Amino acid sequence: MLLPKAANRGFLFDRRRRKRLRLACRVLLYRDMEPFGTEATIIDISCEGFFCVTDRVFHCGEKLECNLVIPGDNQGSRPDEIFLRCRADIVRVVPRTSTSLGIACKLADYTVARENLQPWLEQAT
Image (cartoon, rainbow, N blue to C red; front, side):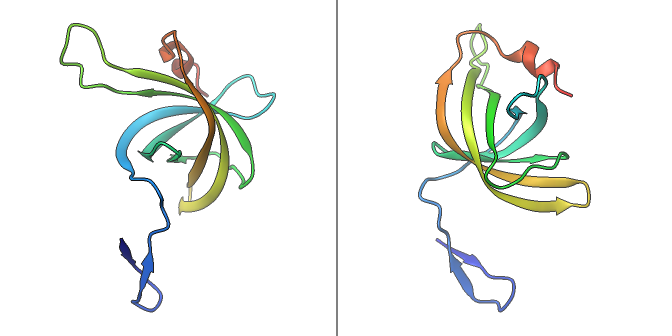
């Protein structure tokens, strides 16, 4: 896939190896030794990582614990949400606005959580 290049109106190759799914969902990002997570919004996700937006400062190279809820279609009698716990490495930080940053995270490991993570998402600061 070719992407437009803003500087000289040329084209760049998209270096992504996996397809992205545009998805707006909440994620809690935990730094080591912090009792409460920072809430962020996922913009897109793939099997190798995700890109999210937050108003808190993060740095490339940081390691995070993450809790997220991937919404389902909710057409059946019970919700189809998927609860994930994961470890991720921040591989890119991009200023979005004067008060928000975009964070590209590469998944190091993940598990499907057995319990509902919604109470944890409600504790976000």
